[in-house]
Image (cartoon, rainbow over all chains, first blue to last red; front, side, top):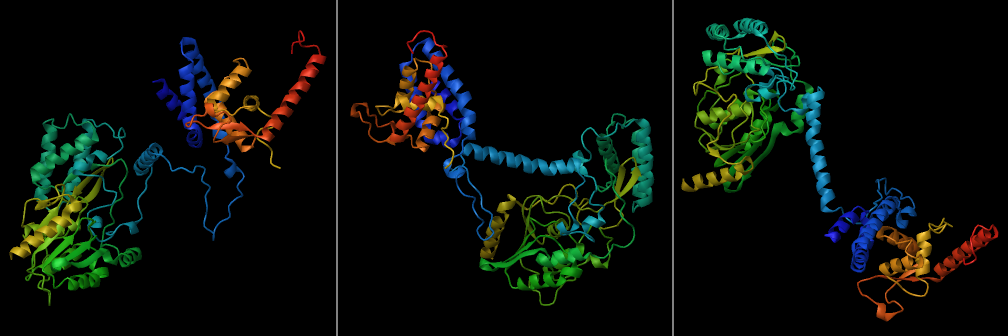
Length: 459
Length: 116
């Protein structure tokens, strides 16, 4: 036991000293404990050791090794910076572990702190789908979280407490906004009636926090209308109104970025057994990327099966969704898009001349990062039974609703387009699109290849 | 000439040099000799002992030897140290310096008796 304590104390010395004299020091300690038995000699031994530790420890840390202390300053080699290393041994497991842990904590806490105390937003060039896409049409990038993300609406403790008067004021403003902006006046009236009825019945009385109240009001409106885009939100930070009128022209930065990343067509390959593989990380604007998309689909024209890898797809433009989907049908097919009114343009321009992919099996790889326009592509092809989905449930965000400020940092999200969804009552908003074959996203490609192989082999 | 680390010679280093006069010793042997020659007043702990040994080795006042002069004292697990000629010279000059001091102290009659 005493030897263990001594070893622990000796660990306090610098590594170079431990390496050089560790064994000898331990031997010295053993000799002393062996020869100095009895209570008083033992006490004296430990007193000596502790006193020695106090005296010698600072000196050892100030010690400069002669090879380093007397070494001439190193010159740079071809301008490359050089470093002096004060320890010849590699760091041990413990310092490496501690260093790793510290780095991890720093990495995790930095963005969180930036989020809490700063007003940092990445430049628009960082995003694949900036203007004109789901993100713009669906509202502002600063849109407060909705649905399951409500917990991040505002910093903890910053939300005001709501009394009956303030709740009534918010309800009145929300009703006015819904009536003004909602596409369907009947639905708007239903939402308004529901809000007022619940208020009268005292159902809102317990909702004194903004989080509780927004959740409750949203539930009431959705139950009454069946409109799952309708939402009351609170944001402690003001959200600028989206400018009205036609969307502005695409910025040059977006065009440059798309050119740099090959329009997000990361990989266009033909895998063994003639399986086409397209890794697409966004659905870029067709006015910029139509040629790239056409070339990619032409390259894959002769494959026996096609895999769309959308695991890292961050969304984009409905026009590109429609353009790519057109290759998968031999007749015009309706592509439901919650962002746009249903028009003639909602049908794909199928058949595409010379295209051979219309009857080939299609697989889509999904992950929780698959979002927005990528979810539209996935949802529509799933509903049309045109693709097999492999991976994990998608993010569940269609960005279809517009936000309107109603005062006191409250906002109402309403859908202002009339898009017909012939497939289902609800789309993927909040819930995401479930895969047909649920596997971990990293394993999705392997699983899909296995399915392709099985299918082609059987056929 | 670079300034020597052991100038002035620390008490522990001087005691180690004295302990190594006439015999090659390992760490514990040095510690024990120092304790004896100081009548138990100085018991070197591992930190002080080995940092002093390292300084003396760097100044080439002592050296590490594979085989101690006394074969019966040899223990394969230990490192033995021997006084070098420059170490002996330094120990002598330090002793002479202390002797000079002693003479001065005597002349000032600050010592009781004449046994020192």
